[in-house]
Length: 270
Image 1 (cartoon, rainbow, N blue to C red):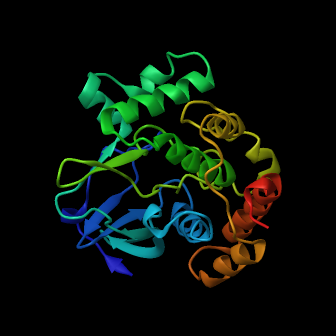
Image 2 (tube, one colour):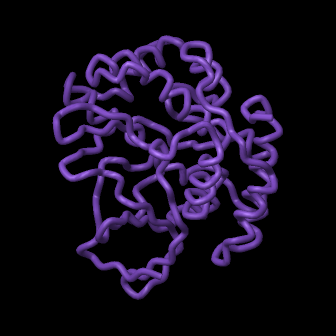
């Protein structure tokens, strides 16, 4: 357990579409408290599972489950090490676009008709500003992760690039997957309801409401750039290691993941 204080609270520009959960920075770690459900264990599970993939270690933000004491209350949540080197900045695509053009990328995307045209606009404008010529492949990796884990909160405030101390842009490690796996049990995905039915209601937010359409479009434009190697046994073993979240929550996560793994079998190496 970590005790955190008011001076550790951080306000950042990556607000979720459902509000802004409590976040703290203490020494070299970021901490986030659960806000709508079980985001902490989801961040942990997703980060551990995607290490068993074709991603490199420097592409992944590692999360651990953490109990957080703040103002006489104990919160469940997670922590991650600060991956920014001295003098580096994390810049969301929304901020990047606004700084360059003076208006919102999220709004600009939805003025364009067609998923293919929207994604091409997003990618081409990011390449133009940053010089990151493989940003389309990077987006395919993000959208592949979002499809299999049902991340409903991948908007322009939590896709980012890094600006290094020399003024050059770099790719950002994949972060902020807490709104995945039906974690919002407070509002949208109550534990007592069937996960089969709830899965059908989840919508993506990057440039389409359909995870499948987003994934298909990114694969058509930029290829398949990510394959997973984890198994259902890996999922169950990770969940068994946790002693803080309820068995009901862990069963929900396992059920959803098994369903998604069966649906997207082609994304798994054999």
